[in-house]
Image (cartoon, rainbow, N blue to C red; front, side, top):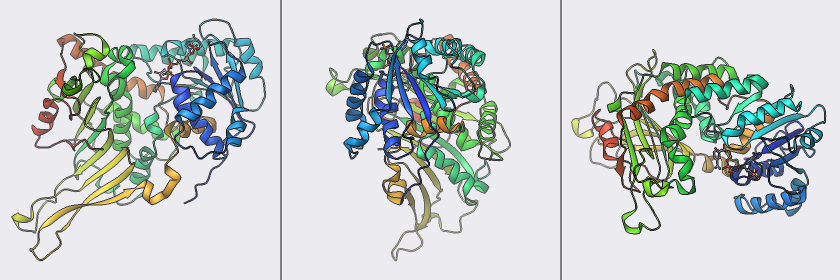
Amino acid sequence: MVSRVIPVAPFDLVIFGGTGDLARRKILPGLFRRFCAGQMPPDARVVGAARSDMSAEDYRRMVRDAIGEFNSDTSYKAADLDAFLARLEYVTIDAKGEAGWSELQKLMAGEGRVEAYYFSVSPSLFGDLAERLHKWGMADAQARIVVEKPFGRDLATACALNATLAEHFDEHQIYRIDHYLGKETVQNLMAVRFGNMLFEPLWNAQYVDHIQITVAETVGVGGRGEYYDKSGAMRDMVQNHLMQLLCLIAMEPPARFDPDAVRDEKLKVIRALDPVLPHHISRGQYQAEACNEAEMPGYRTAVGDAKTRTESFVALKTHISNWRWAGTPFYLRTGKRMAARSSEITVVFKETPHSIFSEEAGRHRNVLSIRLQPNEGITLGVTIKEPGPGGMRLIDVPLDMSFAEALGDDTDHVDAYERLIMDVIRGNQTLFMRGDEVEAAWAWTDPIIQGWEARNDVPKPYDSGSDGPTDSAELMRRDGREWRKVSP
Ligand code: NAP
């Protein structure tokens, strides 16, 4: 299947932090792929900006290496890479000082082009960058800023950051990025829900028993220990990625697929979330891998604090207090060093109200599973008769829609970042979080974290390579349910 690539308008994209890990691993290889796909106009420019003193030539060399290392698709032509690199500039700049700003201002002086400024730097510099862009006359009507996560560490800091950005930019110029929203399947979630007659009539408490959202990682904190320990799974994953998935699965159909209509509906979901009760939460820290302790340290060793109470795993049950979902629990779970890398949303439907079959046929439920990674796809478990002459025995079989199989190569190489950056250039904010959404998410998360702090809550240990602490399974078992197995 051949996808239609519509080139975006000519643009200048400045990447603050253009030498950093995110820029080298995701942003620049992603832009290169869009260039190869013909989506980036030939006169678009990308300006790397950081404190390191280097020439544009040095920067192009660095980006060439980064693309060589991080671009999964190696089938590109050398001439395309040269042409892409020729679109790159570099400015040595200090977000906290005056060095480099007049040079950047001169580079951005062209008229009638989209100007995008990607804040791929430490969050402590977001405010400085916004202020300086304004001071140097670059916060004009064409400008838009892309702000990385984390967006605050609680409600107060998120409100303060929103207020600082709002001094210099209108909300329609601010793109708060959550790369989960750029994933193909996440957008497909909306297409499946709102593009088919089949699901929406069943999408409510009357037919849905419960919904599970799992984002499991096999990696530990790695070299990010110091940063991660100040944050933990609740701030790093639940407040943003899992909440966004929860919003998309639970929201009312927006009147139109436009940014504010979608984000209004997401916001209503967050505002309707019940507070989470302490016994509806499981918190954990992964343990060292017994067989290989030297290479696989436990959480506390990895972050260098033998007494840290930060969680690397959290599972919780919550409810959405509205007409559609009253009584349907939502179970959220995320953790590091789990059995497999897997992100999945599972909608478990109720049993039929009455079975016409004998008891031996058993009771069955339809399960719709939306897999974000790996192997993006959607599976619907349906109940059929077990083949053979053994009478009416029922089994569940998957109706499988693997996107890679159905759509061929098209889905393989489009990464969430490149999709979202093109949305920024197009001026489409649908897949970006609005300021009030982020604040509402913190308003729900803060009391949970404050409760842990007030109770000096100590996370439960769990084995690396497992599905989390035992009380996570217990959280489900108490309700007569169970988690889906975390599998690759
Ligand atoms: P990083 O590797 O530490 O890179 C930071 C970048 O900022 C470097 O280019 C650095 O270059 C530049 N920088 C530092 N101080 C500066 C200053 N005063 N003025 C101008 N530039 C400055 O960080 P990262 O991992 O790329 O992360 C960047 C942002 O993305 C962070 O907000 C992070 O939370 C977010 N994020 C990262 C990832 C990821 O996978 N890496 C994932 C999600 C979100 P110089 O030292 O040369 O100035």
